[in-house]
View (cartoon, rainbow, N blue to C red):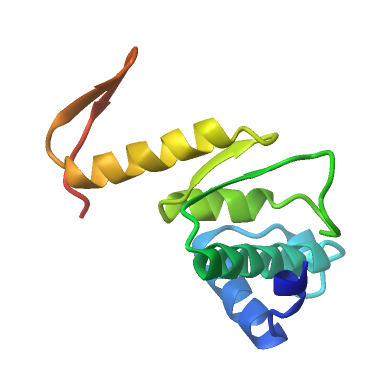
Length: 129
Protein backbone atom coordinates (compact mmCIF):
# COMPACT_ATOMS: atom_id res chain seq x y z
CA UNK A 1 0.00 0.00 0.00
CA UNK A 2 2.87 2.37 0.68
CA UNK A 3 3.94 2.23 -2.95
CA UNK A 4 0.39 2.79 -4.23
CA UNK A 5 -0.09 5.72 -1.86
CA UNK A 6 3.22 7.27 -2.98
CA UNK A 7 2.01 7.74 -6.57
CA UNK A 8 1.55 11.42 -7.39
CA UNK A 9 -1.74 12.86 -8.63
CA UNK A 10 0.12 14.12 -11.70
CA UNK A 11 1.22 10.59 -12.60
CA UNK A 12 -2.32 9.31 -12.01
CA UNK A 13 -3.79 12.00 -14.27
CA UNK A 14 -1.26 11.25 -17.01
CA UNK A 15 -2.21 7.57 -16.97
CA UNK A 16 -5.92 8.43 -16.99
CA UNK A 17 -5.23 10.54 -20.09
CA UNK A 18 -3.73 7.41 -21.66
CA UNK A 19 -6.82 5.39 -20.65
CA UNK A 20 -9.01 7.99 -22.33
CA UNK A 21 -7.01 7.71 -25.56
CA UNK A 22 -7.12 3.88 -25.51
CA UNK A 23 -10.62 3.12 -24.26
CA UNK A 24 -14.14 4.36 -24.79
CA UNK A 25 -15.11 5.81 -21.42
CA UNK A 26 -18.73 5.72 -20.30
CA UNK A 27 -20.26 9.01 -19.12
CA UNK A 28 -20.05 7.75 -15.52
CA UNK A 29 -16.26 7.44 -15.79
CA UNK A 30 -15.65 10.76 -17.50
CA UNK A 31 -14.46 13.90 -15.71
CA UNK A 32 -17.61 14.75 -13.75
CA UNK A 33 -19.10 11.25 -13.73
CA UNK A 34 -20.09 9.46 -10.55
CA UNK A 35 -17.51 6.69 -11.17
CA UNK A 36 -14.57 8.96 -12.04
CA UNK A 37 -12.91 8.28 -8.69
CA UNK A 38 -12.83 4.57 -9.55
CA UNK A 39 -10.88 5.35 -12.72
CA UNK A 40 -8.42 7.51 -10.80
CA UNK A 41 -8.00 4.78 -8.19
CA UNK A 42 -7.47 2.15 -10.91
CA UNK A 43 -4.67 4.26 -12.38
CA UNK A 44 -3.06 4.78 -8.96
CA UNK A 45 -3.18 1.03 -8.30
CA UNK A 46 -1.69 0.22 -11.71
CA UNK A 47 1.18 2.66 -11.25
CA UNK A 48 1.81 1.45 -7.70
CA UNK A 49 1.80 -2.21 -8.68
CA UNK A 50 4.14 -1.57 -11.59
CA UNK A 51 6.54 0.42 -9.40
CA UNK A 52 6.46 -2.35 -6.77
CA UNK A 53 7.18 -5.02 -9.39
CA UNK A 54 10.00 -2.98 -10.95
CA UNK A 55 11.60 -2.17 -7.59
CA UNK A 56 11.54 -5.82 -6.60
CA UNK A 57 12.72 -7.11 -9.97
CA UNK A 58 9.55 -9.23 -10.18
CA UNK A 59 8.18 -10.44 -13.52
CA UNK A 60 5.10 -12.31 -12.32
CA UNK A 61 2.54 -11.73 -9.58
CA UNK A 62 -0.70 -12.93 -8.10
CA UNK A 63 -3.59 -11.37 -6.22
CA UNK A 64 -6.33 -12.68 -3.97
CA UNK A 65 -9.86 -11.46 -3.39
CA UNK A 66 -9.62 -12.43 0.28
CA UNK A 67 -7.31 -9.61 1.26
CA UNK A 68 -6.74 -6.48 -0.79
CA UNK A 69 -4.21 -5.17 1.76
CA UNK A 70 -5.89 -1.78 1.90
CA UNK A 71 -6.59 -1.29 -1.82
CA UNK A 72 -9.88 0.53 -2.35
CA UNK A 73 -10.91 -1.74 -5.24
CA UNK A 74 -9.83 -4.83 -7.13
CA UNK A 75 -6.83 -4.26 -9.42
CA UNK A 76 -8.59 -5.58 -12.53
CA UNK A 77 -7.45 -2.97 -15.03
CA UNK A 78 -3.93 -2.98 -13.61
CA UNK A 79 -3.72 -6.75 -13.99
CA UNK A 80 -4.86 -6.64 -17.62
CA UNK A 81 -2.49 -3.85 -18.57
CA UNK A 82 0.49 -5.40 -16.74
CA UNK A 83 -0.14 -8.71 -18.50
CA UNK A 84 -0.17 -6.80 -21.78
CA UNK A 85 3.28 -5.46 -20.85
CA UNK A 86 4.67 -8.98 -20.34
CA UNK A 87 4.10 -9.70 -16.66
CA UNK A 88 2.88 -13.14 -15.68
CA UNK A 89 -0.29 -13.23 -13.58
CA UNK A 90 -2.70 -15.66 -11.99
CA UNK A 91 -5.42 -15.05 -9.45
CA UNK A 92 -6.01 -16.36 -5.96
CA UNK A 93 -2.38 -16.89 -5.05
CA UNK A 94 -1.65 -19.26 -7.95
CA UNK A 95 2.03 -18.39 -8.23
CA UNK A 96 2.85 -21.44 -10.36
CA UNK A 97 0.51 -20.33 -13.15
CA UNK A 98 1.78 -16.74 -12.87
CA UNK A 99 5.35 -17.99 -13.28
CA UNK A 100 4.38 -20.27 -16.19
CA UNK A 101 2.63 -17.41 -17.96
CA UNK A 102 5.75 -15.26 -17.63
CA UNK A 103 7.89 -18.08 -19.02
CA UNK A 104 5.51 -18.46 -21.95
CA UNK A 105 5.58 -14.72 -22.64
CA UNK A 106 9.39 -14.74 -22.69
CA UNK A 107 9.38 -17.78 -24.97
CA UNK A 108 6.90 -16.12 -27.32
CA UNK A 109 9.12 -13.05 -27.63
CA UNK A 110 12.15 -15.23 -28.37
CA UNK A 111 10.29 -17.48 -30.82
CA UNK A 112 8.53 -15.02 -33.12
CA UNK A 113 7.62 -16.64 -36.42
CA UNK A 114 7.69 -20.20 -35.07
CA UNK A 115 5.22 -22.54 -33.41
CA UNK A 116 5.40 -23.79 -29.84
CA UNK A 117 3.56 -26.57 -28.01
CA UNK A 118 2.83 -26.37 -24.27
CA UNK A 119 1.01 -29.51 -23.23
CA UNK A 120 -2.20 -29.40 -25.27
CA UNK A 121 -1.77 -25.71 -26.13
CA UNK A 122 -0.46 -24.73 -29.56
CA UNK A 123 0.87 -21.22 -30.09
CA UNK A 124 1.41 -19.78 -33.55
CA UNK A 125 3.83 -16.90 -33.20
CA UNK A 126 4.30 -13.92 -35.48
CA UNK A 127 6.63 -10.97 -35.40
CA UNK A 128 5.16 -7.99 -33.52
CA UNK A 129 4.48 -4.97 -35.66
